[in-house]
Amino acid sequence: MPLRIEPQNTFRDALRNETGAAGRPLAGMWVCSGSPLVAELCAGSGLDWLLVDAEHSPNGLESILAQLQAIHGYPIHTLVRPPVNDTVLIKQYLDLGVQNLLVPMVNSAADAEAAVAATRYPPQGVRGVGSALARAARWNRVPDYLARAGETISVTVQIESTAAVEAVMEILAVDGVDAIFLGPSDLAASMGLLGQQDHEEVRAAVEHCLAAAKAAGKPAGVNAFNPDTARRYLDAGADFILVGADVALLARGSEALAANYVQRADGDTPASY
Image (cartoon, rainbow, N blue to C red; front, side, top):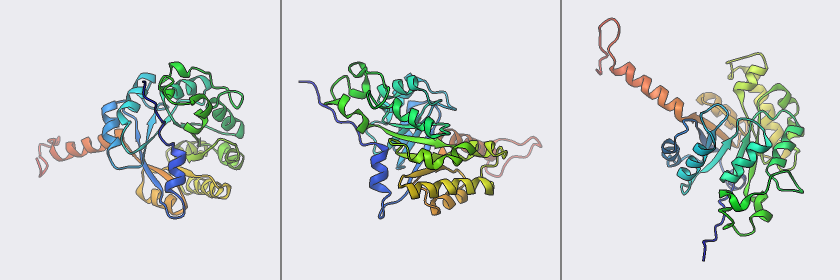
């Protein structure tokens, strides 16, 4: 007899279970290296969630699959960000077994509706049917996958433009949008404040969206590497947050080693050399 397999709980479930009145915000980090080994290393960190990024990182279908397999079995939730809100690409991600999507550059309710439709089989959506060939259904080893698929997928949409901030209430109202995630870097750029994601106007826009999500009864998260900014957003009610990235940790850590141990141009050596 073949194994019968149950899908893991979604990020939607984690937000419901952990961030209620007696819960706490969920802390996570980016996984941008494209390396399954690094992904597995991060999966055992004790954080609540990981974001495997394919928008600004060297990740294709094969590397995403390998990272899902490396992370599987660790007590952590994995979100994957596609490079674009595209029906065909989302179909491929879902068939790989991605259960939690973070869809970038959602600027309107129509964009949000398209993202949700890409995750649903007809008649609720437009997802192509290929479960017998797909890891998502474990090649038809997940009982009743076609009927239950929508339950196994969570959709978080990214608010990262002035247009999205203006439309945030309409986006939050879209059925099937489980959460919103604020991207202060692109938001700052759209506000004419490129590279100033900690600017007070950007922070105010983020906090406006956090308040809108609370009013709509949906979770909201935010990206914040600056500890002071992260704490401010948590105090403002963020339900989940990204506070670091694998590549950034490696970059800063290797720079610290060089600062401590590499001979300087003036011929002097650091005290710890």
